[in-house]
Structure formats: C-alpha cells, structure tokens
Length: 110
Image (cartoon, rainbow, N blue to C red; front, side):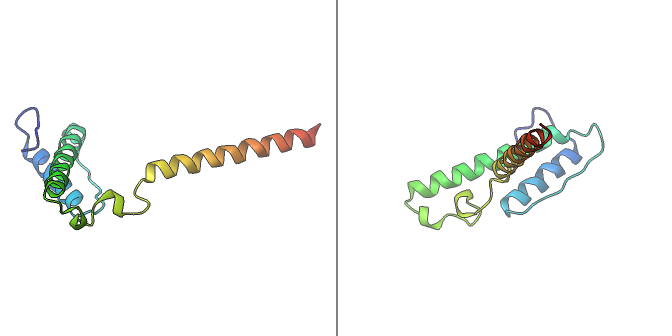
C-alpha cells in the first residue's frame, strides 16, 4: 500500500513497486512512462512509502539498541550522497569565478 489517493492503474503500481525496489537496494533508477500516466504522483507516493518504512526500520533498530547494524543504505554511511548540495556549491563557485573574470576584464578595459 503506497498511500495512493485512489485505486492506482497497473502502470502506476508497477512504477511504485519498481521505485521502491530501487530505493531499497540503494541503486539509481531511470523511469519513464507516457504523458498522463501519473508519474509525479507515483514517484511521490512510492518514495514517501519507502522513506516511512526506512524511518520505521531505523526507529525499530534504535529501540533495540542495534544502531551499529544499520543497513549500508544509511545516508550517513555514504559519502557524497548530497549531490544536490554539492551541485549548488559548485554552481555558486562557478558564479563567483565568472563575476571575478568580469571584474578583471572591466578593469583591463579602463
């Protein structure tokens, strides 16, 4: 049960099942589906269900004092998992460099 707001079509159920499996295995998935098949909602419902289950698993393990046996997919155990943050930082650095180059060129033209 993915918490879909209505009875999902088979293509939506398959999408959510495959998404859940990819997340559970810590892999990267590329998903495609025709326009109007509910990709966005399927992605949201599938990902949130996995996150709820993962959080419940962590809480269960922490209440059993088994934090040292967390699965390898734990975010804290994987370096460079915050690719969004690193991408933003890289863009900000590139913007700074670009602005500095513009200033240097402007001074040269004076």
